[in-house]
Image 1 (cartoon, rainbow, N blue to C red):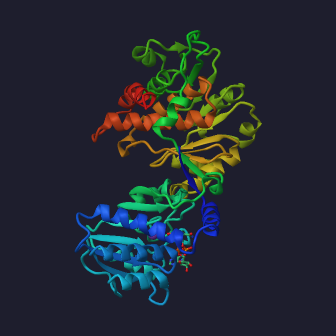
Image 2: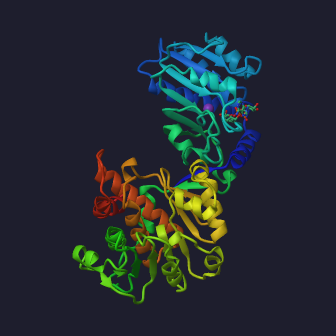
Length: 467
Ligand SMILES: NC(=O)C1=CN([C@@H]2O[C@H](COP(=O)(O)OP(=O)(O)OC[C@H]3O[C@@H](n4cnc5c(N)ncnc54)[C@H](O)[C@@H]3O)[C@@H](O)[C@H]2O)[C@@H](O)CC1
Ligand SMILES: [K+]
């Protein structure tokens, strides 16, 4: 699991490390890691034109000390301060001593730009002076962000106004939450973690976590020798309508590949479902988890209410989410998993969709708290929040996944994992992970059909089991 921490926790761990290290040691470690990463990105350090964008705090200090190291190796380093009156004095002296120079304007050409405008001390988007420098980054020059792209909120990934778009981010000591969550994640490029010797225990509880391949085998169900289809769990799928029969087929497709022993379909599209998947049981009966909502069409609160009245885990998606009553969910004894996209989340919260898009972490936390449910918020970075532990950020996927029906496959898959007995947050995050992995493999750089995502799930499952 790749874990990310709040600014507060990172600062606490930094204080603890500083108390036992010589003054300035942490910054030197950060600068050494940063300089090494920069050198690795340049075809050759000697003679390379390196531009440092330097903010008023220690983030700028890191950039200056790293610039000094590169200058000592023969790079032509130019530092451009956002505020010439506020520049890290030690860093500036080091750069000067190494032969670097200071400039008021961003040079027109650069082989590498180092963004040291703001780090974890940044508040809000870039202010005008810093924004003006960021705008002047020479087109085509690779950008390395120091700790995080300036203008990105380290705790949320939110961007209020201007921000730097980096190709690589070199972050120190621990991942910051904003590096995992969009829009911050999208601005960070490839993220590299430099160990500066923080004590993992001093970092405390992560604010966010992203699964990795190696986490999946312990989460995914595996039938034992004595298992039968009922002991493996039966998942019921309430989906589809005359208007959207395909949603039923796709949700069942995901459910059949999710590890439950059997899939039971309830709805008007049973002919379409059976024609495609004769393995499906049809009609109501006992289940270990329900999936309600894909393609139901219109206001179908009654279907959701019927499932929610049973003491088994229930996943509510799409049309099933309309008009959900928080009091009903909060009174449930079995887990509830809600899987809205940004529009559905906005409707549940009563806010504009843009608020959810720009504040995904806050939205998923608010939904989980208000509804007393585990919430999977779909999107460019899918988030899973159970209201208690770290928010899970899904690292897999492809933009090709933004295609009709892919959410139906995800619902079926997650519901199947619920029926197999996974806790709701594990079912949701494992499903999102496999779904994204399958999509990436199936798309392979070309447009993707939702049914192809479902068809690629077994290969994704095998791939992580072998990890
Ligand atoms: N604390 C430590 O032990 C270490 C810190 N390191 C670096 O230090 C950084 C944090 O340094 P600081 O706490 O000085 O914070 P920053 O360097 O992020 O900047 C803080 C200052 O920028 C100004 N500022 C805030 N928001 C702004 C905005 N939107 N536009 C323009 N100016 C704004 C404020 O005056 C604030 O004091 C880390 O991100 C990391 O790069 C590393 O050297 C590793 C060790
Ligand atoms: K930065």
